[in-house]
Length: 309
Image (cartoon, rainbow, N blue to C red):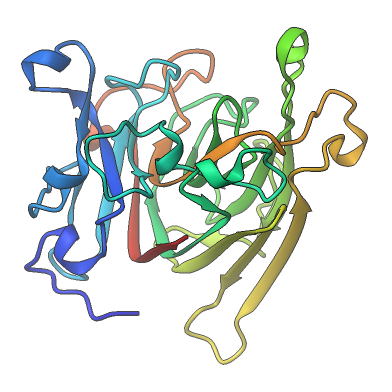
């Protein structure tokens, strides 16, 4: 990892030349009144930071993302986020969802019209805080999404960290969303895969001592090569014996684990996301929103973040 300078803005410590960011507050631009704050690639790379939602930690130099339990959100979500969105093209005049800004699988019939076939994202990070309020019967309570591959409609990858407030260890797991389309759209289903600890822990259950504590550094690597998504997660980074978990899934194939509604992602386009996408909201998850001082927020610190196409 590169040496981080606590006196510099995130874009001076990290290569953010291929990213834009969403911040959990209302945009100040007149043309975006009533919409969530979106900072363009150009603005982001002009030493942008906006504490407490996106800034450089003054001790470690980490790039910090934070989001409250309730704030202005993007149109299709009820959850607040401070999150980067990858853009492949250097042409700033085209939109984020244009083909040149996104990647596809090798199986895509028009692959040559997109920005890339496949891609790779690496991150080293620590989750500093998750909401301390919420309904433990909902898996989104006490959790944050720290990395994604987003398709045009559904998400083949969401990486979660979740920790119950009465436990010392949290869990890292990832979800694959079956790509249910058309009349079967309501059949969408998130399929969880345990990495460190386990998903869906409830109050009263043993804590995941094989998990990860708040403030503990770990890493993930996402690589889409051809039609296959390869995932690698590593903890105990400062130990002589790091612990690594690896996964692979053919995203084009469909019917993942026998799910008949999964059309696969062979005809889809994708982009990477990274940051703090707070899954705790004041809706059905019943998270409170009494401010940062009350612990009603999530925060993630990145020490390394790279993408390649």
